[in-house]
Length: 169
Length: 119
Image (cartoon, rainbow over all chains, first blue to last red):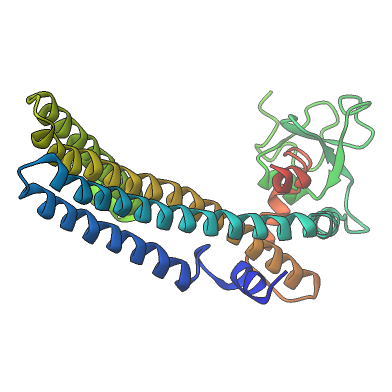
């Protein structure tokens, strides 16, 4: 990968370089000038033969502007693709690091009661709770469960039961 | 969100639609002009101003619209990059604000952490 691509992919706030902007703006300016000249030049002619060169100029001007826009978009697409690929290359490392942070944050203190919950569950349980048996659950500290909006199970009555979180039924 | 805030945030898309609308208007005017006469030398000026001018404006409008999409994608990638850097800082013991988020999404009642990255 070129130095530019590496720099652009990590530093720039937009996927274009100043050079891309110059080419795009220059081509559009050239196109606009060509179009205006063609309009004024062709407008004053009375016969078809004299108008045709101006028409050609106008078509050329639009093509130049279109090419500038196409180059601009291609540069943007290319830069985004490079950056996406860079991120995807790092995806396994990111996944591992996220899992490590998750494990650290879910690690229970030695004296803490083991409380578990799983996807789609609205209550947390003791590890030996029959309501959690056979379900895909993972341990987390009490405050983690409470932060996630979960309430204590009414069957195993873990920590937090009777504090207003789960004794309502 | 009020209109001014929307225009400020989405200036490129607003400009794109304005240019596309203007380009369509040019094409329409050109078409009416050309259809109003049977003499080719009188039709050509409409073709140049209405037709080519319309294409020119439509081209810039389309370019702005696609550019806005590309910039949005770039920002999302930027955000992912920042989160990754924050996570690395956390791994090395530095504090970072994103840690709360990392803990929140890692709760077992929520989608797996990997889903955040993959999705």
